[in-house]
Image (cartoon, rainbow over all chains, first blue to last red; front, top):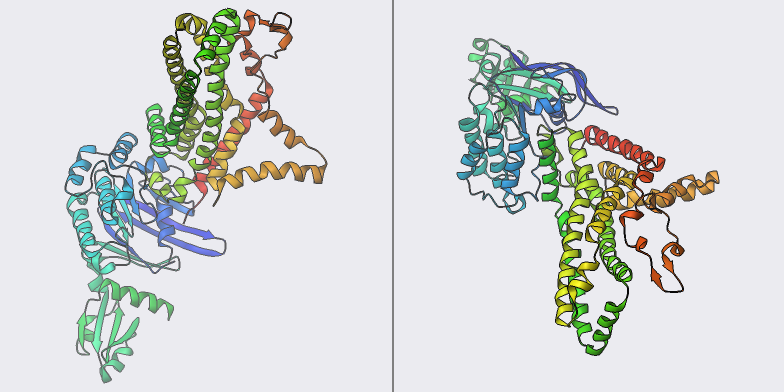
Length: 285
Length: 304
């Protein structure tokens, strides 16, 4: 497999703060990777580095390019929607399409118009006249019509209601993702994207806590629901995290043989959100 | 590359509608003033008749000077408006996209920071002057036409009194040269404004003008010199584009007549002198440095 993104010992400091602290990873083609971390974990900094919006230390290549120094070439092949990269409020929809059509070699105006025709976004409307949901539809339509190898989404559905959020991800999968393209996505509403991810990456305090495929999670992680003496026994097996729900103990184990736990209680594969909490809390403990 | 630039410049016109609104408003005001003047003056029948007779009897040269002065007056109004527009535009050019947070969207497209900043420099230094110049020409023609209609209605011979006396081409060529040369001469300010707009967090106007006021004072107090204020003063003073002109050269005080020399504006322009002026080139270098700094700021500055 070819690595689309390759990071080796990448760091980014702001004064004494290590926003990204010596991370190494690769992202392969055709993946939908969820980048998950608490606020201030370094997600946005890492994305900015990948997008060439900030310089960083270490070796970082995206599509074989140095993102910071070859931003223009890179931007022909990658797209991003970020909560902080909003569309200019003064621009009209057709002006936006005109502009992108003439600066972006991989933009299909026809396709963008087709996608927009499904929405209520009028061609002559100014962005400031559109609702937040419509602006996101507009942005996604544009991005979808760009034949990009990598799409980066940073909290793309922030502030949208549930209908728009569902529709956003449905459109993303139906119109954009074709197995050839790669998506990197961050969001706090991890439950909503769990089913579409192929890979996850947890990041906290600038470090990567976990980078795994969704398929591998059931093999590595297991959640045990237990109580009483069984809980004591289970605790002896070294869970990475434990919490209580309705008087029962919920323990998360990593790299353990499921048969060892089978008689101690109910076993589940933890949800991404639960696993995230377990990894973060576990790392802090 | 050029197609790219044109797209970027078109974007500037979309965003900053004042680029064409300002000249349009000035054109409307000038034309309205001129119409109002004609309506008011028309009330004084007798005086108007005398004036027309007077205008018919003065010499050809004097009439030309009078009409040229009228046209130049209009051009000066536009130049004034253009200067103000350029200051506001260039201070907003790299500031607005940061204020409305659209900068990261723009930077998500395959356009370099240098291309973007350059498009803003071209807009301020070339597009605004060209649009304003077109507005000047249109306003000139419009006002000469309505003046002719008015004059004919009053029984004057507009063809003779106005059109045969207007050195229009000479006037417009000279005006065009001034409109192109002025931004080049003022380019260090333009560069400075773009630079300020690329880094300031708030009130670009204040940040841009405060140093121009404070630095000369500090220099005087601390160093006892006034190099900075002289540099500013020279720049905002006379452009080396014009030949010196002594009134005695063309104005005969005894006969109260002007010589033909006074009529041509083009003859007053010293293009060679302008282009060989070290001040011009020094100014362009300063502009280049500030522009480079603005590109650097856009590239390295992090928002959020």
